[in-house]
Length: 88
Picture 1 (cartoon, rainbow, N blue to C red):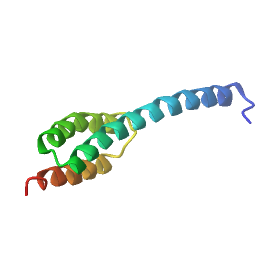
Picture 2 (cartoon, rainbow, N blue to C red):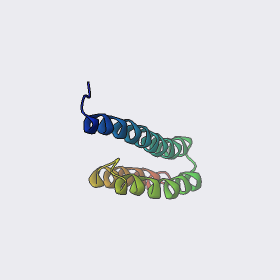
Picture 3 (cartoon, rainbow, N blue to C red):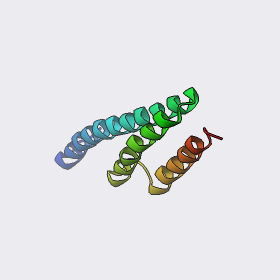
């Protein structure tokens, strides 16, 4: 339990930051899910459009510290290769 004023303040800040980061992660997952659904439906145009929408969200997650840079790059790479493979 937080006892000192500083530790109480840090606990409040952590709660606030946790809520913000949770919302950011949820938003990123939503964009990624839209890409996944478009890929599974087999619609290449929709999948490409969803991927274009998801890319800035992933990068924003990196700049905000929610995702690691390599994690976002890996997700983008794997999704783009799957979108590219739809037409084949």
